[in-house]
Length: 152
Image (tube, rainbow, N blue to C red; front, side, top):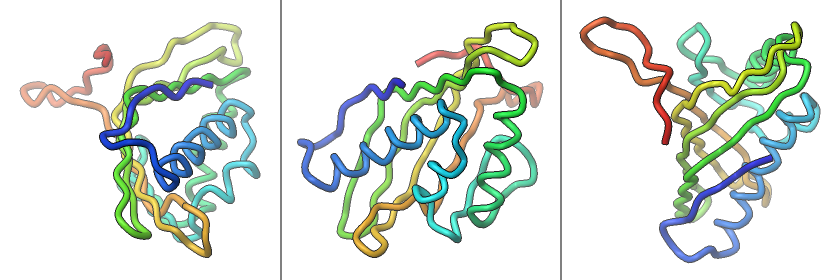
């Protein structure tokens, strides 16, 4: 598991709690454990994930996306770099770079590609839950093609 980065403000309790939630997401992904991921998201999470359609609404839709990933990989690694967290009351957001990699089912290792990620959190019943996330890939506006070879 790798979550590297610094906050724009001194780490306080909510900042540390949110960073721990992000670490739990990484742990769940690397363990390929959908049930470990489930409680980290709000039931009505809205996800603008990398795969179509434009939005995935609800925890079951979010977990179906991870389930697809887990069927492709024998072993999963997920790295988050340069995480910045901003907290205001019961709402917070974080942004970072993420990279999914590992060993594919055919035995080939892949380092993956860097994507941009944004997490929006809300404190619900005393716990920080992801209510929205977005993953994006930069694209070349002249060609309309994704640019997958960038690194932070």
